Length: 87
Image 1 (cartoon, helix red, strand yellow):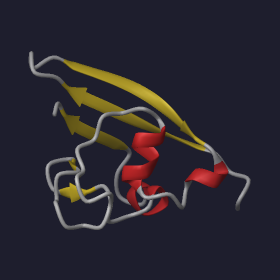
Image 2 (cartoon, one colour; image 1 turned 90 degrees about the vertical axis):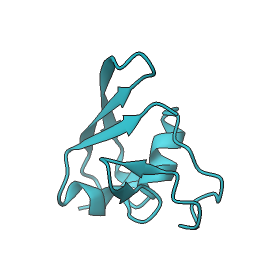
Image 3 (cartoon, one colour; image 1 turned 135 degrees about the vertical axis):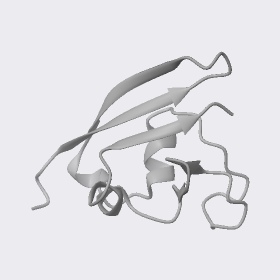
């Protein structure tokens, strides 16, 4: 259903090893964005020098997921929280 909304928890680890978590709302038109573009749109700092072409592999979240390689909808099929390490 294109009208549904959702939410995602984004946790960030910073250089002091402390963690902050934010609940981020997902609008219906954002489910098909790549996770990388969604996080950047929501002003979360995500490393990427290839602009989402799956070359640099710097946009890793949750230890082993390339955020440019799947949509928000695909990510939510298996995960509910994005964990981002400080750049």
